[in-house]
Image (cartoon, rainbow, N blue to C red; front, side, top):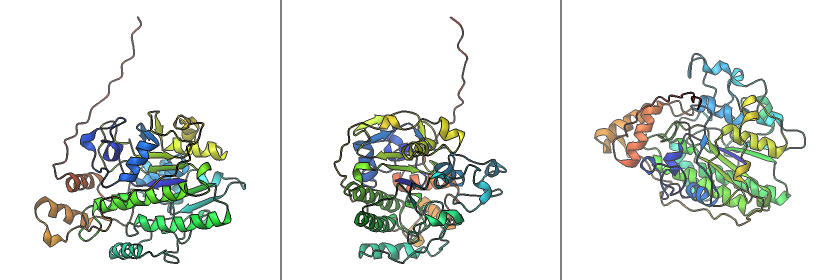
Length: 396
């Protein structure tokens, strides 16, 4: 199972984990907000040297699905000719195709929301509505009807799972998935590859009346926890690998590199309580999927990438995972504009003017600062850029 989320750096989530190469001063969200991802990193294998290949969603979603980036999107830069984050521009698709194009007739695949475009729903009040329906136990049967812009992908798309929209809580997405998981259990057969988008950790900044950033993170974390628990208690757990990654790392500081990001590998066969500091990137995940499913490489990048075999162990640990409900409420809303003053009001005004309909189509640095101030209550850290100088060793 391949879960793709939005925009976090390693230090932002795991800097204060107490193990691995983290900077506690840059950790923004702790155990009260994202207890499941931090527990999964502690209990399974911690990947503290994992990097995003791209810079934002314009290329991040291509790297995670096709292990490459076309020249077309690099000139004249993001938001120039195109911003192909969700399969809606055919010139951004590499000639070698995408991950699902490499599946043989013997490999089954389903797609829960990744690379299927956006819902285009601008009514942000829907998020509160769907959160309340989730609280009331709704199963969301027939609520969504998704169609991908890539025709050949539609044969795999789960139609009642929503496309990209921050208005749809990730716990709603998790509930829809768990309903499908039960159906697979009843039939005794789960697809070989399940791909899923969980985007709530993108946040909408401090947009008045929308879910607070911490509520968005808790929503995303609670969804991840429930999905992992559901799979771990299913008949498929003994032969399942769950790979979880951000599409990019642009919305957080990191003391190693701005591309270092949050990634998890969860399985009975992944190491437990270990640290794997091997250099990995998103194409390492793609290569690992290819090797497990017997698929050919899609590009030079996944062909030469380090696969993730060092994260695994030969003897399985079949203990199921118990999800943790975050202490942070997923129902908390940003204050109305009239209740704010000073910098908080300026941040809310800026957030309300940003375009949240498409992933990452907002000023990255400005959002970074808004999220930092909201969570930490302190000025944004000063950050120095350094030049690296490499010298050729002299002969002894």
